[in-house]
Length: 287
View (cartoon, rainbow, N blue to C red):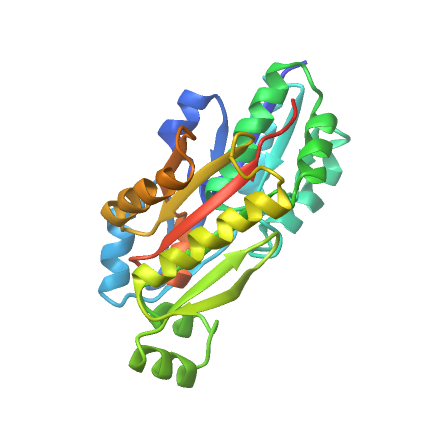
């Protein structure tokens, strides 16, 4: 049985990477000053951040249903089943839309709501590809990914409160006070949504909070204090140099453990702005 693995560009997987990995990526649409663009198709990371810094009106959206079904219909000419892994349902309506559309495909399309985004979503895609190579059915892959949906963790710190304020994530008064006090909030994704976790005064302090929180998760949630059965990841928004520095700090805590570094998906970056840093982990599947 041939299984196609599909995700969206919120995973951080580019179209070029998708070809190399043997998976398929649905580009997420953005509205910039009233015009629609698609991530990694006609909107690069560099173009996005330039428009963001210029003060353009940017909002995210979900693919129109026909875009999703056209991709599925094309793949089902070559594959027997599809496993579709969208971003967390708590962060976008695209997951519910895909689940609704899949009902018309009579068990050929399995949409997985495993509550992940960015580097942790990417790991789910790679896990699904591995399971497909082992001969698991679409139903089996979807079940395993759903059962392990909470086996990941993300901590993010932002450089500015401007974009959280713009997106209505915090009040203008809180943003003004935070800017005055130079607060660096630490946010977290534990399953579905982006939530507040802690406050720091400096980026150095924020990084310390994130690393300590990640270490605690590994020890207490995943029972893997040496990080031998957990994937480690770092993500950033237009902040590559700082991400590499953070990678070095994380490597000191867990020597010998591979650490994947990637840019945050633009759907997240749209709400938190440039200069952010994130640390993440995803428990290895027993496959």
